Image (cartoon, rainbow, N blue to C red; front, side, top):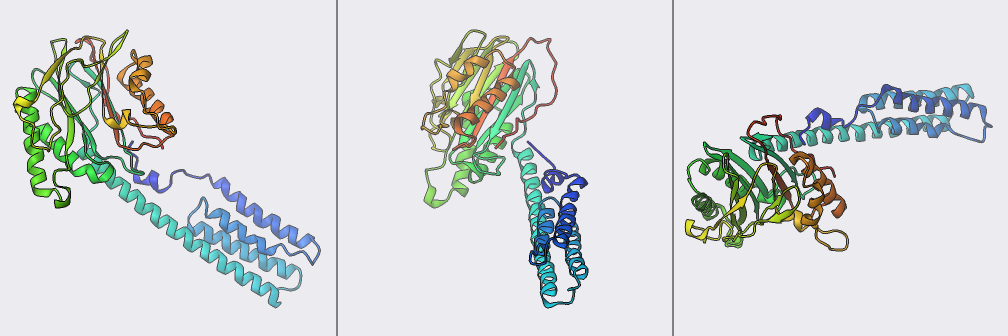
Amino acid sequence: MFSSPQLLARPWQPSRLLLLIPVGLIMVITVADIVTPGDIVLGPLLVIAPAVTAWFEGPLVTGIIGATAAAAQAFIGWHSGVLWTRNILVQIFALIVLSLLIVVFCAVRERRTRELAQVRSVAEAAQRVLLWPLPHRLGTLQLACVYMAAEEEAEIGGDLYAAARDAEGTRVVIGDVRGKGLSAIGEAALLLGAFREAAHHNAALPELAASLEQSVTRYLADFEPTEEAGERFATVLLLEIPDHDPVARLASCGHLAPLLLSADRVATAPELVPSPPLGVGLTGPDDVTVAALPFGVGDTLLLYTDGVVEARDRNGAFYPLTERVAQWAGHSPQSLLHHIQRDLLAHTGGRLGDDAALIAIRRSPAADRSGGPARLIPHAR
């Protein structure tokens, strides 16, 4: 998902053999103009050479090809004995002017490409700080995550996820801030920071949810625009998985229930009663219901945001996540998300209407410590 500015500045490195194309055009046009009858003038076509060069080279090489084309036009005039006629001089002058214009456009394009590369590198750095990729393994859990932003060229938006370890097990949060794309990053950053701190200071999920509610409420009191008072909120799903107990405890603040994938079935959390979303001032420890879900070795929990299940195809049909995911229930977390992402983008025609995030968590035997660093699955547009 991350790429270097150098790669962005020049998405592909053309072979110098491509320069044979404009050089060959200059030679062919020059010879053709010389051997054809005098009433057929092909010299003006030489402007094609710098125009083609600008497609894959920078302004310097483009300028050299333009100068070569102008020299070829002068050679045509000299060979025909009409070099100093007004017609040939005008053609040479016009070719020089057009070549200079192409060089200028090429230079502007190169500058904007470098600026875009710099902006993207800053965005990538911001993403690394804000939305850390989940590790491939936490305790006895295997994890994978994928994030797909709705806005073009954006890498982050209003969906969020994070994980934290303590002495007893692992806690995970996935959430969805109202809004999408860049406008929702502020609230997402607040929630992520609050979770990473509060996850280590609250013994139970209800107290953790109440702590997040307090952080969001304070933030909105200071920074919420007056015209949007009461309209900003966030839904979150809190997950707690003990290391040595085959269970997963869940608490939802207005968020969708996860899917439990086992070898023979796909199910949702049957007793998950959501409390109000964060930010509306109604979430206290007594308002949060904790549900326990059997989660043994080989089982996989799939957490997701509403951008997944509310994604529509060209006929307006929602993406049937529960039905589609059953065919990949036995896959590893990375493979599972890879299949879902490809299928989701195929369903929507490659463009999402809202940010979407998924996390796959599989419990593996305690002795299984294989794996490397996690990687976000890139969003192909």
